[in-house]
Image (tube, rainbow, N blue to C red; front, side, top):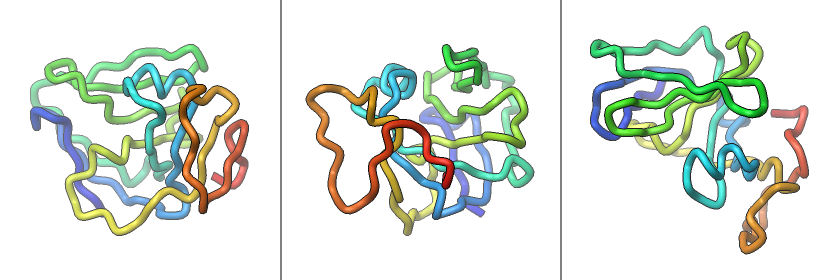
Amino acid sequence: MANGSCLCGSIRYEVEILPEKIFNCHCKFCRKAHGADYATVAVVKYSTFKLCDEKGVLKEHKNGAGGFRAFCSECGTRLINYAPDKNLFFCIALSTIDSPISFKPVAHANTESKASWCEPYAGIPQFSGFPDSL
C-alpha cells in the first residue's frame, strides 16, 4: 500500500499501486488540469482506496470525457480521476504519492493530443489513445 496526500495535507489517502498500470497521459484534459505537458497517473483498484478528508475539502469536477477529476479545494492539488463507476476506472496522480516510488511509467497514452513541443521519451510504448492493456 502506498500513502499519498495533497500539497497542504488536508487530504490523505492509501491505495495499492499496480506498477504495470502507470502511464504518462498526454490528453488535453490532463494537460490542462496539471498545467504540464502530461500527467503521470496510475490506474488502481478502487476497492483498495482509503480516503481521509476530515475537513471535507475534496471536490470533484466532471470533465469533458464524462469522468471526474477530484482535487483539494484548499491547495488545488489534483489527486484522482475516475469514471462514474469507480470500479471501471480509477486513477491517482503519481505525483501525490508520499511513499518512496520504486516504479516508473510503462507507456505514453493519448499522444494524439500531446503538446506540439513535447517529445515523449523513448524506451516505453506510445499509444495515440488509451491502450486496452492499461
